[in-house]
Amino acid sequence: MVSGIMPRAVVIERRILVNYRVDPDLLGSYLPTPFRPAPVGGHGVAGICLIRLGRIRPAGLPAGGLRSENAAHRAAVCWDGPDGPVTGMYIPRRDTSSRLAALAGGRLFPGHLHPARFRAREDAEGYRIQVASRDGMVDIEVEAHLADQLPPGSIFTGLGAASGF
Image (cartoon, rainbow, N blue to C red; front, side):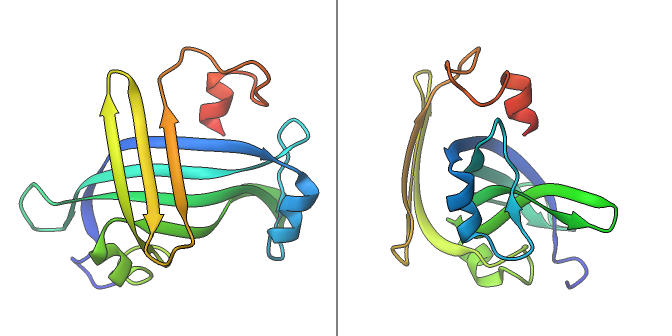
């Protein structure tokens, strides 16, 4: 990276994690070596992180900056490290509303970013986010609202466990 080009100030304005259960054997068939599913309650977990970043600006420039909507497609994985099993997230794809981020992906920003159109609505009722990648590979629509507890049957034991995940 070129000194002074990397964004200095970035604010996470919104982050929504959408997780869903996946058969561990099916999920494992999509994962590259050395990854394998990291089960939660006997289930594989995959999902999407929908995040809005604001105040993205190079070091040395005054306050303000760019804003972008982003989606990271992810799966909970584990692999064997030198000291035993390690857990983390495998992210096979990232989408962004920022043309700059898509063009500079891998150089100024981590990983390849695919250009996409995002529509986001936030109000007292909740959130609605639509993502359509320009290459036609992604078409997502998420509607969500704030809740004090997880729905019955969740694989997570509570909000703290889901948030920590």
